[in-house]
Every structure is written in C-alpha cells, then in structure tokens.
Length: 115
Image 1 (cartoon, rainbow, N blue to C red):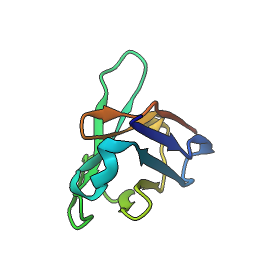
Image 2: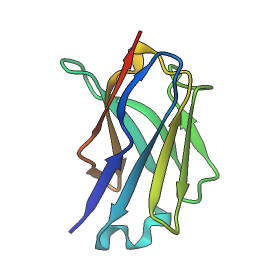
Image 3: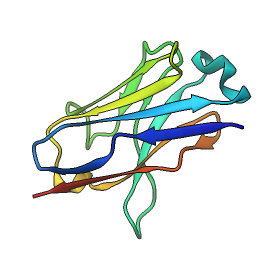
Image 4: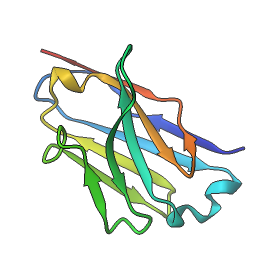
C-alpha cells in the first residue's frame, strides 16, 4: 500500500517554528530517491497552493515567494522522509499542509498560527 504520511503540525504563535515530516512507504516509493517531492497547503474555500519542492537527490529546491527565506525543504532518502522547517511563522501560514510525490498525496497536517 502506497502511503505518504505527514506529521508535525500544531498550534503555534506568530514568530514560532515548526518542522513537518512526510514519510513515504509502499512499492511505488521503493525508488524514493528518483522522485521530486513537494509540499503544498490549503485553506478552506481556497485552492491548494504550492509551497516548496525538492529534487530526488536533494540538491535542488524551489519555494513559493510567500515562504522563501523562512521555510526550508529537505529530505533523507535513507529514511524515505521529507521535511519542511518553517521559521518565523505568520498567521497567513495557517493551512492544512500536504506532501506530494509521484502523483500521490498525503492526508495533510494542520498548521495553525495565532497572532
């Protein structure tokens, strides 16, 4: 069974940090290092939006303008896990965060930033 499982969300105050994790499992991800992985987020009533992505090797990444300089995406291919370090969080970062890879989505983890 193919799975992407996010964790690490929670309720924090503006200016705080959180680290999200996305663990991949299943036959599809047996070659995990081949796949570019990404984080997206969604607020109720709005379209899901891109946050960041990272190449299979981890050498290349890109970010949405709204998070560049505050968020850092990384991965550990030995653990088949991707991370999103989120610093200097703002209330507008409040959303459900989803990981995505090889046409699969995780179930999402809620991040809430209070002002």
